[in-house]
Length: 270
Image 1 (cartoon, rainbow, N blue to C red):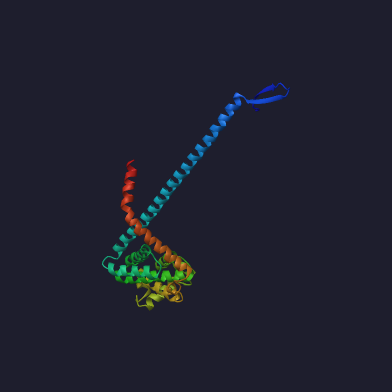
Image 2: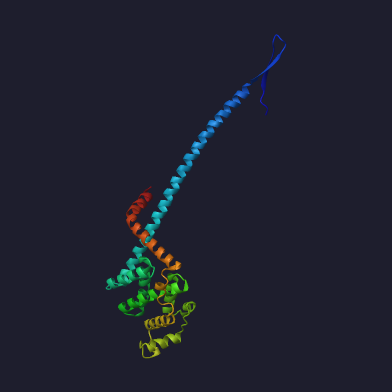
């Protein structure tokens, strides 16, 4: 819409025509409004900057809270695993702790992983009828073998542990991917060869588990010690890094846990 103008025409005594423009009230109002918008624009910019700053602060606070929760979660996981570990290795805690430290120091495991793997095999073998001390020794050897097989085949140790546990209870197919072929007949023959039973009818579940482990160990000769041989490789360095970060998170989480507990209590009271 055009802005209306007032025009004044003046003629001097020499006959020269002079034209003078005057801004209408609308023009003045428009200019005033424009000035207001310019000022408002600056205000909006200021508000935008403050909003962005506040948003970044809130986002950083949430990120910090997420990190804190992650460390507390790691600490809680270690606490739960340690509770089971102490229960299944009752009476032989010192030896079990020594095994766990070896796994952490030489097999790229976090404390949580080492205790979880050891206690899972121990809790599998003892109910089968194997003596606790014998089961403990087998648990340690199985966990080391799992780390070596994982390193040799570029498979996570946790996956190898699951597969070996399945084989120890009779699901022998899980070990084919590692080059170990087991079946009921070969396991029974190995149990008899080891002198675990006099006849096939006398072979127990724990005897089968011990025989299966020996067969797995024999067929994995090339993999044994691979973790130590390739510790400087990228894959194992990443395992070490992950284990170290988990340990650090658990340590920080243990410190933060009392504070987080109070925070949660206050949040539930709101």
